[in-house]
Length: 510
Image (cartoon, rainbow, N blue to C red; front, top):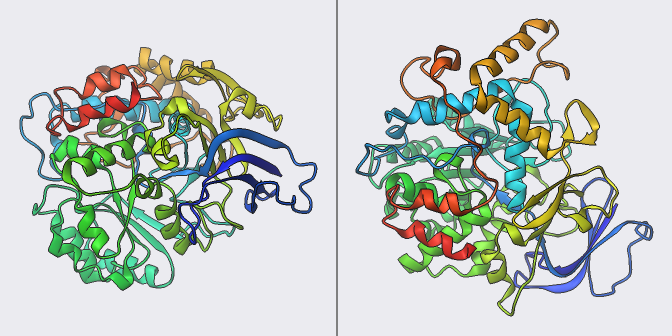
């Protein structure tokens, strides 16, 4: 059990603007038992529960990143140096001359040699931005150390891992029809759909979804930036699901982004995803700032409360349709995923949340377990934690050491393993191959070597992305930082196809 006291912004369905001093009571199952205002009576059974008092800071539902590819999030921003015009669609840029050497090979090298350390690093990057649930995990042969909620495989208290289907690959009409049937049976379908410039050939992916019957309340379309306003009309308001908006990546690659106002006119819920390291922000905390820049430039009129909803209640409500369990709101029975944002100054709460940086994330709780935050707050429950310094503050995080599950994995050890790969990828792959040859048990066993299958195109043709075919040429770049920093902003300037709009992101971090 756990109690979090502070200024609660629960994103309540009946009072979405509500902010009040109070407490969130979390039960032993990792669910919200009660949200109380002021000094309301303590529910039965919580008298001895540890209390994390965050003072005047804001206690909000954990931030949800509904579009990512986390296996690539050690990599820096990428732009093909020979490219002078925006790409047409998602099949264009994987063929760029530098794509394999900059993205496919280094990501495969890390995934093949130190998969647990890779996953720890990228999860910590998300936690640093207040993320508690994320989509876009690599496929794995067995369970690994997971502290963030895995949207792709969440069972919501049951045993089925087919509550949500996902696909980054373009599916044929027959496969889409099968997904539509699963949706009619209650499942969700998260689909990379229509990613490209308006009117490009990938626009037909959305049309195929419509014809197959996929456009329902549990359909979550990622990108959809090639759609015209007339395309959106095909998604009937009575069956509206969600679209995931990734404006940074859209602008970086294509020079334009999703028509979110057309989607909203059809009742489609707009959510936000940060996408991956090579063409996205560090976390959804950064992505909502890009959404604000686009809203201001294009006159979309999105309020700060609407932007916060795009990373909390909007994705939470559509996921709840698939899981039959609430997320993205602090309400009785919901997943106890909580983010605490440091309060500062007189601005409205929603503006402070939108403008908050990694330095302002005071605590992140996933399923009732504190996973990241200020040293004093993380120490209340007495769980094992590791320490490091981030965004100018002493922090603690709780990610178990895969070799010693009762102990926290130290920052120095996680980074040492990854830096060893960076220093000598060929030797690291040789060590990984030796571990594989020495193992003779079932591959789904807990002690089997962890094998990850990354979810983005390799570039080239056939098996051109096989890391062992290129190991002598592989160069793994230094670890990209966990936070939006000077190097990240320097990498933006003069690159991509955003027309300078993304240069404005730095202004939020000064």
